[in-house]
Length: 409
Image (cartoon, rainbow, N blue to C red):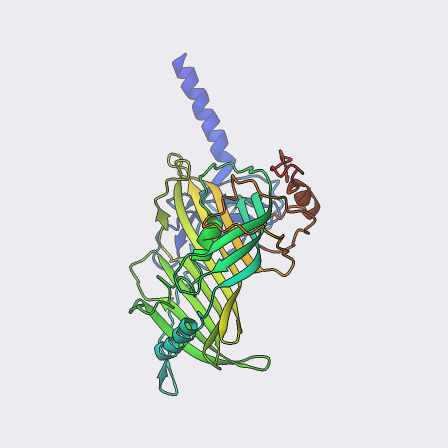
């Protein structure tokens, strides 16, 4: 009986193997496996990932509609390959070409970019003349495997202290949220406060605007022509070749007074690195960071700096600790912007150092349109229908979050 059972198992295994094939993804130069590469079948809208050995198993199905397949991985050029070119190849291997770049330090009219940066820092320091209070709109979005699973929006007041590095205070005026349909039930921190704390003008620690920044950054500088003003641009990157990530970015400033108007930073995974990070909130999964993007813009009035927009988003792959497969492609976006639509009711400002947008109860944010925007610039994902999303974000007159519709299919 046992013999027949083993024979049946073997026959089933052979049949399964005959209906699928294994594709291996390696670094074109080093031939080292590229772990957790995204494999996307365009017409079928089927997204798969390779394992830690760079191997992905695709069903060998003649019903595929896709003619083309894309391979994507941070630190590598996107590869686009015809499916029929590999379907009949035994154990095909595809090489990914890495994209590494450095920014050499250059001189413009014998002035180093570091010296120009000193002027930018000084202009920021002199701009802290008085406390600033700004009306703003905040949005936080979570996407799992291309599907929006949580969204919250708030109108608020934000207080910026006149001394640099002091914590901001906020007052949530109105808020709305959809009920979380996240499959990965992680514990969320207060991302609004995290976003405000990432503002490099008010909190320069660990950024290029820190006066104590050492040799970990390299710079380049160029002049730019604007509408009616002249601008300078400093590009920077980290010089630490031993790290898993490289940070590249730029600062744009008005040459008149070295007044900063844009700060951008992209922290991305280097070719051949894992990006693994310890996490106590991921439900037992192994977290592999892929990219983190930050962008801040500023206005000036009478030599005083005013934040205008803040946007931060990042992407992680969550890998099953036993089966070595990517279960979740997780992206989270946090944006803050000055908003003239925000009206402050008399006596409503109650300052706090936290927002508690997950569990707090706030007056309901009503009659505000859903803004059609890409929360993750450069990334394609399935955005939900705006009208259905707006219904899901509605809340009750009793100022408690409603039992929201489950859906957003």
